Image (cartoon, rainbow, N blue to C red):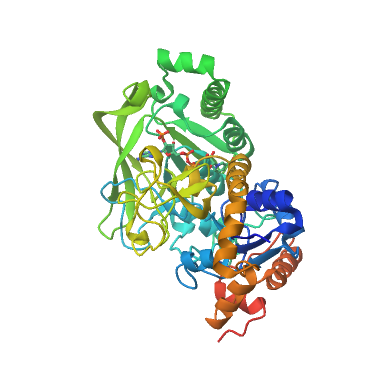
Length: 510
Ligand code: NAP
């Protein structure tokens, strides 16, 4: 029976593909560094997008299957290393996604902790109750204006969390500490002070990375007034017009922004003319197109006071004539108290595995991880004993046999959950193509029974004193969160401290 290990617990699609392909002939061990499964769905997907989280039901429906072992609270690199995992299984699939962030590399970006600059990932983890971000020094009662760098869908998720009426989040699984800051309570007083968000995009509306559905949701369902700082921020070139003609989605994004900005100006004009029907607690969403962040400005105590931006023009000067932002030498300051960097996630290397630091991915061909070379042996990977060299054909290193990769770690931080389906199918095709060789290798190293898989891994972790959260223990925590949610009229009340999670899972914690 092939034993396959998936590192990260939202590898829903590869796991389903494997079970479908092999039926009873496969056992899948799923690791997660947290006691909770579901990775991105629990800590990345927006709380007001509960429909997207329904994929959890598919995962849960077969996670208790005898062919699947969930091993939560197991950190690769601390509790076990990749070479040990490989020795215990026929194949290892790396699926740990992107848990770091791209940098702007501008002055003022790094302040002392609490100094008001966070990556969007950190902010999203904070409001989603990820234990690593639960104690970030975020105090929305002291923040009036937020600049978000980037205009992808993650930036829109952050803008909705900051601008939408808090009632939108009350029934969801938004973490209680974040909800308290949005709504206000006896500790935080009046709730969030945020009144304006600036979406800072280095290119124009036609190049915006967000999608129309998500943009429409922010513009029409969240009670925001859309604005531009200067009228020329909605200017489009001839090339932009041609692009909009050719691409419906680009045209739609432009139309949505223009319409929303037009409606907000008309409402302002009506208010100025004496119409008092405009909402009392208006929250403004500024589209800062053609603005490249160049410095985070800070006051004497280090607090953020603004984001300095350079005005840009878009030119076809990129590789293959792609459009890039070119600086104009004219600068503006966007006054703000907090900066969120929503310019893309970044994957991190794992010891013993090749890593392409430039692209932030594990080098692979159709999901087969390639052997390390001098160029791909990153510092974290330097202790590797797994296939250094690179004896493949045509200069491409050979595959590191038995090691696979899926998701953002395989192709970079783009695409939605559905994109991973196609991606996983490709990786599982590769694994299936290698199955005979992997089974033969397993017999050579372990005899006819092959490697021990999850049973061997659990024994090793037990011996090391690791408190492994299996599926039954997770269900105790799941039930606890669901019951607390029901009592509060919410989908779920998340536990956000690992210690408390382990206690609820039935471990004695000191
Ligand atoms: P993204 O879509 O790649 O957007 C990144 C944004 O950051 C772009 O506006 C980009 O501008 C900007 N940027 C990058 N480097 C920059 C720099 N050095 N300075 C200034 N701006 C910079 O990334 P994302 O928003 O993190 O989303 C990741 C993926 O998850 C996307 O595929 C997204 O669709 C998906 N997602 C989907 C949903 C949903 O469906 N509801 C929700 C969240 C995320 P340029 O275009 O000029 O490079």
